[in-house]
Length: 120
Image (tube, rainbow, N blue to C red; front, side):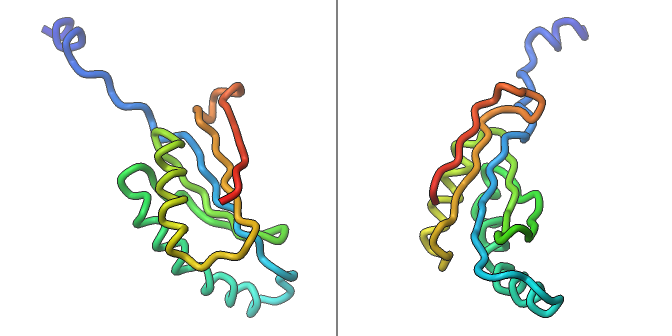
């Protein structure tokens, strides 16, 4: 019976490991803990609203600050619909000029996965 079950069962969906990173430039250096907290609070609403916006096609994996930008990491089964959801929702947000999306349309284990950087 096990053989027939494997033969006729549906394949499992791909693991959600295609990446889209949103890069948001931050003006000026973060020189103090207070400045870091101000920036974190400023982008908390952006992060939370994007997390809800991508829920059907992916998930927010984390965020970080450094080197003059705020970066939000998203993973999903397919990068294109994930990037499209981020783009569409970003139209409703107030973001600084110069935002971009890094898109990897393939598995993290695939060194040949296509990658691109696109303006938001």
